[in-house]
Picture 1 (tube, rainbow, N blue to C red):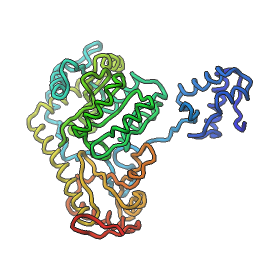
Picture 2 (picture 1 turned 120 degrees about the horizontal axis):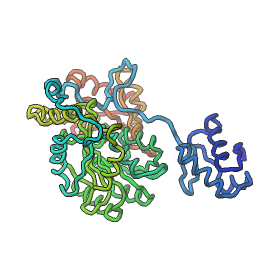
Picture 3 (picture 1 turned 135 degrees about the vertical axis):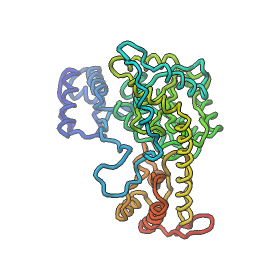
Picture 4 (picture 1 turned 90 degrees about the horizontal axis):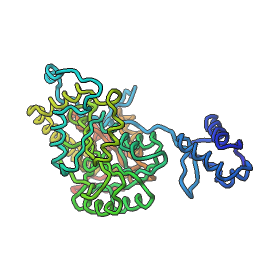
Length: 451
């Protein structure tokens, strides 16, 4: 063998492999020798080699894929949402809400403090719990509800996975996928299994294939899927629930991030007999990203394990933040503003899609903050052309988990906060960039002809 793995005990073998990784002799994705071959080369029992690989897997250094073998784990970073650092380009890749549509909290801040909260008290502020229970009970059976407050949706998903999984467990994720979900699964050392998404949401065949691979958890966006904007249709949700009926102990996490802003109804994968589930709703999109608070409604057993990871005195969500959230969502003027914001995002995205279509590049707006624009040429080529014109965009393959030719020909754009003149200029520049990348677009009444 070419690798200089040494050692007679499991600990020494694991330390040898770790050293090779740290020195760069083994790179992410590189295969390790089969257990039997390694044991023969080192003259040790096969169980010793198995134990060494188990130590490396637990440490997150390698990933074992059954018959596909053991490989060095990929620790490369996933692109993050938000503004790009140190860019002089006009950034239309942020995924941010419009700051002018986020409620001003200054009035609510003045009178919300009340008495202090001390160690050992309930982690959910009672008044917020009442409001949150009514919010969730509109879509879930009240008898099933157990509530937990977390520091945002990403925090909830991370804790939900951590209370149910161990390293290298398989997690089904939508493909293309929300960047934060990709990052959470990678950092947790879990194995992502892609489930394709179409215009009706997660596909039935994709879910069946993921379950056949032994996934122990599933993260789904029931509406306003990021990046595609897809929302579950009633027919699709029914089919997916039918598939999951045979797998009641797979943890189903629904990240309903756009909730109060969405123009689509909530449709759930969680059937009445499902045993392990959680619905997560964050306030970040309508009260602002700095309002790090989410409500997680789940089955009693999942809620109990989740609560253990939110021990009072260490990681509970500040009651000041909870009271501020309640003060805002209890204000009729704020709620009217949230409704107006949802309409604004939909109208601006529809208008931009219409601009592109009128210029010969057919596009349509889904739900959510972003547009998922199809292209007749690779998105990376268009992205480079747009950078020369002063725009920073996201190519669709950043969101892909698997080889995804369709995603590689998409742009994800955040355009709802552009003035009309800027929106017109961006649409014109996108069409020019597509042409510069090699496509011939001919505007016609019904769309586009590619030459």
